Length: 166
Image 1: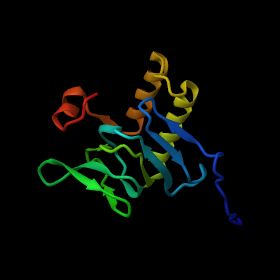
Image 2: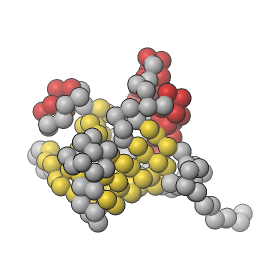
Image 3: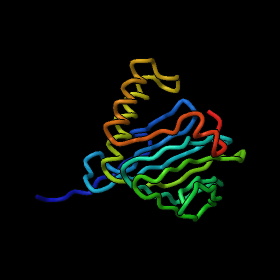
């Protein structure tokens, strides 16, 4: 079977728009079965709450400055990341992000195809709702997708303990 080159044109890609202003743009083709590449953006003074998932992911910071909450030997610690910095989050590791600046943060993200599939499913739901908080039925679908793909989300108290207010 002949392999053909695929080009993902700007404006024609799947985008996961979240109510908090975070944005994930899937850069790799949906047919890719080995990996997924995304461009993630965190708006000024935004963040991503404490979470983990069954698959590893890696980030290369393109622009802006962010802090990543990373799991170390015995605790969770905030680490500042600048353009050119790279971070790898192992499968199952708790992590979070925050942008304490007035400029957005942009990063190139690579993850497993499985995690990419979960994000595509979530993008379908958020695409139906736009930037509005999802309806109870849509929110339940997001919870079901998260559970199916092995996502864990920290609750309000767990996030507050690491300096994230929900």
